[in-house]
Length: 169
Image 1: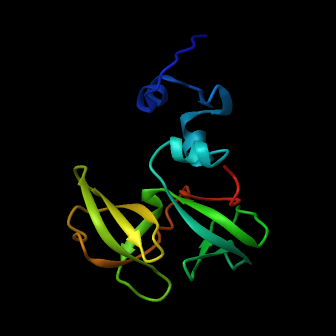
Image 2: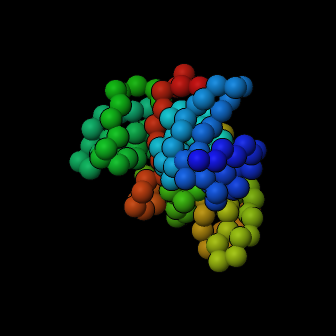
């Protein structure tokens, strides 16, 4: 057994079978890199591990395929495994969990504020009409700065969206 202390996430995730996240000397979560990314124990770990956006949300209740969540007046349905009581929440969204589309009913309205080219894809920064900053992975020429877009869940395998109580941090 070897213990490596590092402040570099990439290094920790590349070398570690299990990784511990500490804050102010307190253990927040221990798990595999996949577990820390996909199932963060709290908002601190969620923000610390990987890229993410946080959206104020409200849990509406059960839906046909999962949990109904309202975000800036738009209702989305989350993975069927999610269980939360109705009321205020914070929705963590990873860039790969969202997709860009035309602005239409059922989409979150946003404006493209930036683009970071990363080869076959780009990381677009968006400002929602409600004032939240989020990121979305899309083809490099999908949209341009200043463009109005719609955002919706990508429905990809593995989620990338997770709910937390509003006072979770």
